Length: 256
Image (cartoon, rainbow, N blue to C red; front, side):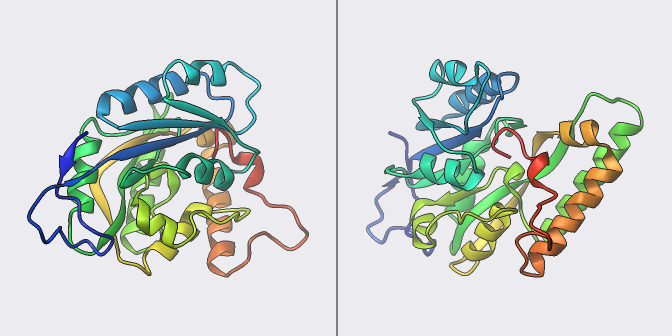
């Protein structure tokens, strides 16, 4: 077991002067992610997580089989990202939990970044900055750069981070707020807002590399406007538009 000066839920280091155990659980939700899942799990394993849990949201491809070859535990959940993430975090003993989507690539030193962040006084959670990766090397590259810059600016202004930025949290803080709530949209933003009532949430300058496949599939402008609409609804306290349909539900994939 790795040892570090991981303190209590207020960020204070142990008064005894002895190092406290620091263990890290990674929870990976997935849904039909056979293209991305093996590499994602391999990177987490090589990065030094102590427990690797993958949670299936009802895949019809080979994702569960591939996950069983690489994860410590593979769980079956009903559909719904909050349900997947809560199930993966449940019944663990690790001091910290990292929620990592299957289509993001964390920095190679993510474990060190997480430890250093959570050791700071008063810090209960954190995340990484955002970069987007895609297949279009032309105008798409500029669009991805602008979208990521906007997301990072939004996060610095206190709106976010979102789940594709690799949120990590002290277990005691996560359990104190009751984990994720079953929000129809932006359950990650809801989690972050409640965590900030307990302490600080810090965002590393080191970025995750997240897939831009949704923008490439549905169009950069359309997807950006959709995200802006959904965020506005959430900030206004509305879980979905009048009429009962949620414009974001059809865009979520792979636990997202």
